[in-house]
Image 1: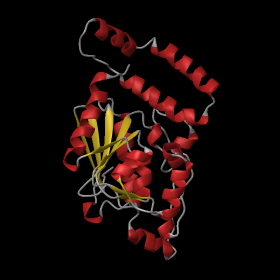
Image 2 (image 1 turned 45 degrees about the vertical axis):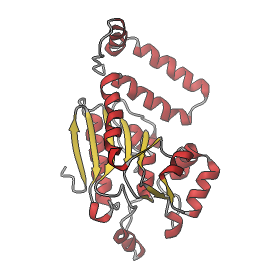
Image 3 (image 1 turned 90 degrees about the vertical axis):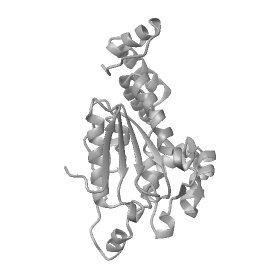
Image 4 (image 1 turned 120 degrees about the horizontal axis):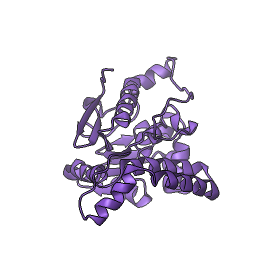
Length: 273
């Protein structure tokens, strides 16, 4: 399909997906939702892609839902609140929870890093919470925004946010809808790094390069699935799953390569098989 609202680029095993409505601070639309899902699915299925970076064009990440769309809903336009499970990808999580309209990132069998380069609000904040890691620029500003629009905790954020930052902090950010900046986001654990604006993409890409070139893509896909699915498992269930996955790993080419490159003191040549 032709993507109208996102840019898609693959170089050196890294796919960079850019929300691309810079004149509107990349405000979210249904078309952007469709374009992003298509881009993520394409990257997830591409054997040449080892890591995915999600960022925004211009001076913002995503300012939340486009106000034109919200006005239309207020005037009685139909909305897409489908709870129907979506198709997953081989290697990604198969849990129904991770195949919903917005919660599909864990079903993508590639590591996803959100590079939050500016204002990040509402649904624009929810989307990177589904990424596997978040880096923020020093100038990034965040808000849940929903309570200021007469809305509620949308798209699974009431499940995600407490797991990342704890229940009291999630209560604060959701119910007050106050703005907070990158240093507080780092202190809360919402993001893992705060990086100078002009170095955000370079440092994010350096991390993605580490994933692309030095670790087994099969290992990453399995561990990503294990970690997300563990939220629904007991310790015993997670251990049984891990023992099964370990037996499978012993049979792979990447396991043999992992031992060989260490003993031979050379760079790894993982194939994902």
